[in-house]
Image (cartoon, rainbow, N blue to C red; front, side, top):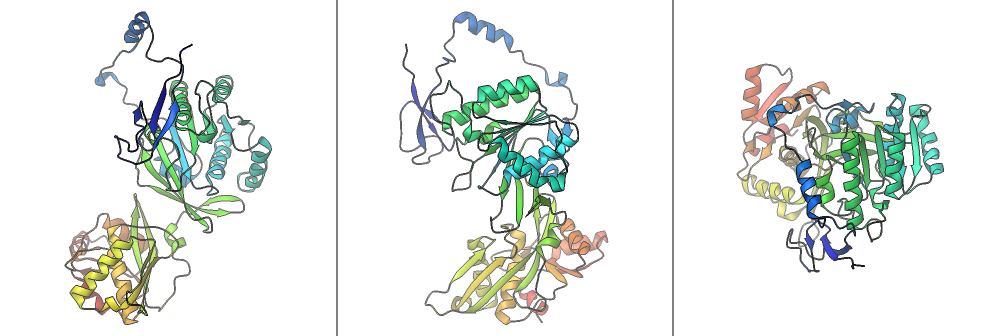
Length: 463
């Protein structure tokens, strides 16, 4: 009997090597090559007759002969999830859902299954981590918001992928949930469940089954301490869509973000709130994020950030106080730390503020993390407000990019940002002068537009 060949795979990029190396030649990462015995199936070693048969089976098609029909999508009944997916689930797609433990991945997918089953779709929910009784208990908890789960929802507690594929062949479901891919294994692969080779092989089998049978498959993936899906990096390349569930366990809200989508935009987000009855959609995230905003306090400014095609208003807070140390402290929560340092250097140079003797704390209220350059103007205004101890008018918002010379530059999708501020009852918008002139020519905005060209002009808006 021939001895299995030992190969090594990179956990980050999937690079394959016959020997172990400290640094991966593919992605230049250190210590990422792990041992993975290859399958004994002997792929690629067949006879010449077999090769000729395979060569004749693959027939290319002309581009002009391929159908132009739109992809078949199914609405899940959860609007925020449909938004991130690009308008619904595409039949035959493979979707990877990742996130921290306890963030709500299984809860969201079970809620989705309940909505799809109520529409008459047949679903197979496969769990390798929970027993059927545990899933039933969670379903009973969610029944308050969904009602009774339909009989078209089938549950299976199994980790052997061959048995799972057999159940898919017998039941012929339209949708399959695999929770999670790290618990699945194939007998032909001589390694433990969750290893690089097992995750790669199991995902490959699910991909073939889903495409050949037109089954939409959702795969739950564990994440590492760095926040990426555990297993080979090529796992994200194999699937059609990658969704990440973000949020702190102690925070009420959750953000579902699409980082890859072959059938839609990759910048869309869905916002949910975790309650006792499960995840509830937040249809107006701006209003939710501004709850509890103080009035008449210095260091508080409302900014508008774009998440995909959705404008979201958030509160930017700054606290500037005299330092007690030789080196002042700088803290940034919810935004880029280096960007805050850069903006403070601009204020020191262009306005002559002695910020090198002050501690600075900048926070995006609500726990959201935003690194968009359009937040620059709001951060600068909040720092100036806290430094001078003068409040900013609570009826105005600010957005725009600040350059190193102190100039205020235009940002994209300004019209949508202004419309969101107008919808929530704000009276004026501080924005780049070039953008304000353009919107005034159009005459669509019913809100006061204040164009600014340099950070020196911000002082008049502090009271």
